[in-house]
Amino acid sequence: MSKFKQGCIIALTLLFICMLFSRFYHLGARPFHHDESLFTYYAWTQFEKGTYTHDPLLHGPFQIQTIAGLFRITSKLGIIGNGDVVARSFAGLCACLLIFPLWGLRRWLGSAGITLLLGCVAVSPGLWFYGRFCRNESPFLLATALLILGVARAWRSKKPAPWIVLAFLSGATLVAMKENSLFLLFNGFWFAVLLLAAGWKKRAAQPFATQLRRSLWQHKYAWITGVASGWLLLEVVYTNFFQWDKSFLSFYMDIMRYWAGQHKEHRLYGEYHYYLPLLALYEPLSMLIVLGAAVRFLNPVKRFGTFILLLVSYVLGVAVGEWGDFPLRWLLHTDVAWGTLLKTLHMTQSWQLGMAFAVGWASLSGTWVAILRGKWFRAWLIWWCGMSLLQYSYAGEKVPWLALHIMLPLLLLAAEFTGAWWCRLGSRNLVADKQMYRMSRSYRALWMRSVASGILGLFLFVNLLQGARVCFENPTNPGDILIYNHTQMPVHKLGHDLRTEALAPQTPQMLLMQGNAMWPLLWYLHGAPCRWVNESEKPELEGVDKIVCDPEYLTAWSELTEQFEWENVPLRRAWVPETLHLFTFKASPENGEAFETGLMGWDAWRSLYENVVYRKMWGNATTTALPVEVKLGSKKQKH
Image (cartoon, rainbow, N blue to C red; front, side, top):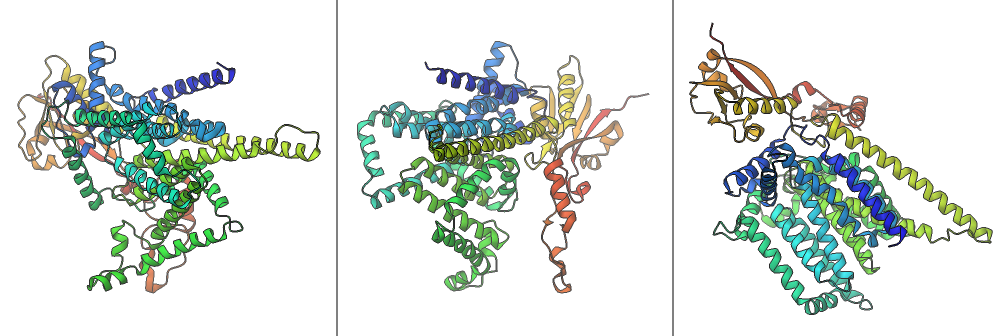
C-alpha cells in the first residue's frame, strides 16, 4: 500500500472518530422532541410486546424496527439500557457512516472536491444537529449516498454485480424509511429520460439505452438478485416479519395517501422560499460555489442566449403568477379567483413562481449541456439539486429537517465544481519551468489555490461554530430556524424525575391526562406504573400523588384545584416571526394596509442581523414565542 493511500485511510479514520465524538457527546442531554418521542415510544412498544401496527404518521417502519433491535441488543448486554441515548444512537451512527459512501465517490469529485465534501459534512450545522436527532433524516441520507454510489460504481466497474445489488437494497431501504423516496425515484426516472434523449441526439457517443440493455443481459442474475432482495427487505420490514397478511405495497399506499392529504392541507405552513434563507444561513459556502459556477456557465459574454432565456423564464413565471388565472377562466368557462394558481402551488407572491421557473430552466439546461459533454455525474447532481429544491419548496409541510434532503445534493454539486476547478487550475503547469511565462502561471495557480484554501477553511470554521452552538449551547432556542418547535429543558428534568418516582417501591399512583402533556412524557414514562386518562374522562383521584395535565383541565374539574398544589412547567416553545419588510416605501393612505404588520426599515435590518448573528427573535416575541405549558400537581399535605 502506498503512503498516499495510508495517509487517506488515517485521515478518514480520524475524521470518523471526530464525528463519533461530535454526534455522541452529551447525546441524551437535550430534551426529546415531539417527533422523537413518537418514534422511540413505538420502537420500545415493538421491543417490549413484539407487535407493531404501522401508523402512516410515522412514515416507513424501518427506523422503528431498527431502534427496537437496538433496544433488544442493549437489554441483553445490560450495558446502557433502553434510554434516550440508545434511541438517538441509530441516527448518530448513520450520520458518522455517511462519510464512507461519499468517500467512494472520490473519482468523480477529485481530491479537492472530496476533501471539501467531507469537511462540509463533518461541520454542517444541519447534518450535525439532525445527526443527533431521532428521525429518519440521517439514515435516509446514508441510504441515498449508498444508492448513488451503487449506481455510479455499477456504471463504471468491470464487475458491477455487487454494486447493482447494493443499489437495489439501498433503494428498498429508502422506500422502507420515508415516502419522499418517491422524489428521488421520480428524479432518477426523468434523468434516465434525458439520457435517452441525449443518446438519440448525439449518436457519436454510446447511447444510454445500449449500455443499459447490455448490462441487463450480461448481469441479469445480479439484477434478479437485487430486485428479489429489495422486495424481501420491504416485505419483512413492512409486515413485521410476515405477521400481517397485507403486502408492503398496501402499507406503502396507505402512507402515500396519508401524506398526500397532509400536503393538500398545508398543515405546517411555510412560504415557498422557506428553504432558501435556511440554506443561505447554514450552507453559505456550498451555495456560493454553486451560484458562482452557475454565473460562470451563464456568463452573458459566452452564454448570452442562455442568460437571456434564464431572465425570460423568470419574467414568464412572474407573468403567469400575475395573470395565470385568465387562461383558466377561458378553458373552464367559469369564474376563477385571482391567485388560484399560486395557491395551488403553495405560493403567495408572483416572484416565487418566477424563481421556480428560473431554477427549473437552469437545472434542465445545465443537465442537458453536462450530458452532451459526457459529464453524466455532474449532470445528475445538477438535476438532483435543482429538482429537490423545487419539490421540497412545493411540498405542503415546511419543516427544517427536510432541508437536509436539499443539502446533500447541494454539497455534492459544490464539491464536484470545486474538484473540477482545482484540477483545471493545476493543469496550468504547476511545476516551475525555465520559461518565465510558465513560471508566472505556476505561481499564479499556487497563489490562487492558497487563497481559495484560506477562504474555504474560514467558511468551514464558521460552520463549525454554528454547529457547536446549535447542538450544545442552546439546542432549544426557538430563535434558531434550524431548531423549529422544540421541547423545553424543564420537561426533560420533569420526565426523568417522574420516572424515578414512579419506579420507586411503594410509590402512590401517578395520573396523566392526554393532551399536550402526552408527548414526550409518554416516552419518558414508558414502562412506569402511570395511568393515562382521556381529557373528557372524570379522573379518579383515589391514591393519586402526582398529576400532569394541560392548564384548561383545572377549570373543568374543581376537584383538581381542591386536592392538589399546582406549578407551571414549560413544555414547548415555537416562534412565529413577524414579516420583515427590508425594502419599503412610505405607504400612501390608499394602500396603507399593505404594511399593517411587520417591521420596516432599519428596525427590520437590525432584527435580521441580530437573528443571524445572535439567534435573537425579532418583533413581539413575548407573545409570538410564548411556551406551551403543562401543569404539575402534587397532593396537598393534610394537616
